[in-house]
Length: 412
Image (cartoon, rainbow, N blue to C red; front, side):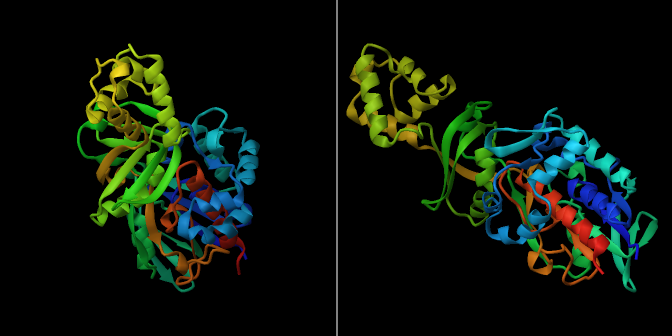
């Protein structure tokens, strides 16, 4: 039997779900609320298109936290190598960069959008834009989908509406209400992969400064709750960059619970405190006549020096050989624990991805079919699964979309 399928949402999950279902023999219509599909995909990876990650399966899944088991069947059907092969077949060769991040060789996310749209249309998918779905209702064993003053009937529905971040791209949270209307429970949503707002003016004074190869630790009520190493960025409101985004989900939860939330930056992660102290002793001894301000240029970016002098209470014009043991200790501690108190986070609309969504216990991970509404399939960010930055979320969208499309078209 040839199934009639409506896919709601034209992001990467929806486009691949539609193409896969059509290639499997279904009659597929994709409804996208914006004027074109793939609007959010166009801005991923800062417009360069971080489409996936080459980490091995277990390492990949570890980036999804407590919900990692749910995704395993989908990744078994369609994983990174399949993404690479598909894109190559669509004339979009890929390249691997630091941390296993996967990009198109062209460094253009628009090339990804064009390829996925072309793939869907080649498989026979009808794509209709400017169609904001307002309702999904049961009609016998099928469904009726309402948008504007129109409606369409379908045997099966694939819901791939995304989350609630970047609403200008069409991710407005509509899918949560649609899923709820069909009986699904929604895990409360919150921003994930979001920049953090800090107290004081230190971050704003460092605006634009990027730090590489630093270790960042998140402390909540004085206890370490996460850490990572890599790159971060100071902004006019606080902290951003890959390291901060990775730690942001736990930080958001702590802030919302009114717990003391701190970010500690280790500017010299390659040196333990004893080795760093030996380095400082050597530098101070070998350059005894040099002013402290000039000596610090060998230890940190110039923009950090005024902050360091203020917070360590060191005089910049003091000769290096006059630095006391107590002053050296303050400098060492500052280099290992540059502290920022987190007082908030940026709005949900600025989050790269949304945490929360359709409760995973109500979805069959082997098919992506709803356990509470047979004939409804779900994929991508509308589900309660989110991961660290680095291409993991996009691969999850593709993998779950592929499985949903295949299952919707072929399941009896």
